[in-house]
Length: 282
Image 1 (tube, helix red, strand yellow):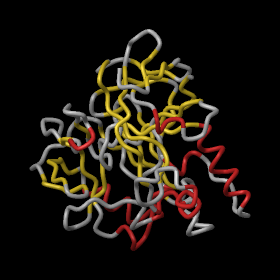
Image 2 (spheres, one colour):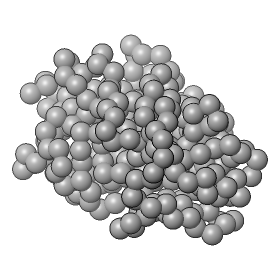
Image 3 (cartoon, helix red, strand yellow):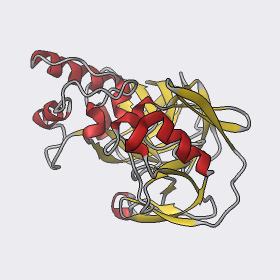
Image 4 (cartoon, helix red, strand yellow):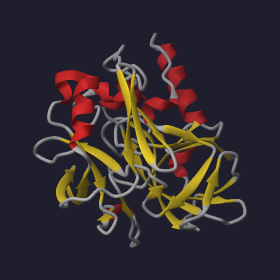
């Protein structure tokens, strides 16, 4: 098996960046979910509340995070940490320390998205703060992440997407692309749902090892076109995933696996990397 796609999402719930290689750390891929949008209550905002966030492009240069949208000029945000007082912001039930970016970002968002973006601000994860991953699925270990929903890595497989799209077609629905699931790693694997039995994935030279921790429960973001923000079929693919019942012991729709890094902090990860699977925790 090998990695066929690597994606990083510097700003939570905005468009991602597809890469040929990057570095991986215990908290996730380099720059992944380093920024987040919050409302006036300092609570995280995603496509669940504002689907239009899917239309904002993201790029990284040597010195800037660059936001883009078809209706406004791009905005560059310096990679140098901003000066200002730390804020306490919330992601689900976690409270994290963050640094606010310039109010210019707020004005830019309102110009790009209109009233739906009013009051949003961009914050950057304060790296001297550590946000721990829930320990229920860590087998006694520890892990941490930035502004991801809960885990530092999300991986999906080509075989499971093919099976889902076959099921959608059989029910008269359109196929969905992998981008709907916003994975960090896409693994070439012909057997559908095979990832649900894996315990670890190790790069063939031993450079890094990932532990698969928990099936990823999916939400309405999977119904949103990740380029246009259009929602053509509001119930899909969630309804079909529920019907497929790939996780009989769990409620809801699931696709992909959440993972943590157990070896290789700082290692380079590349598209094409060959992976070896263990399904016994070894």
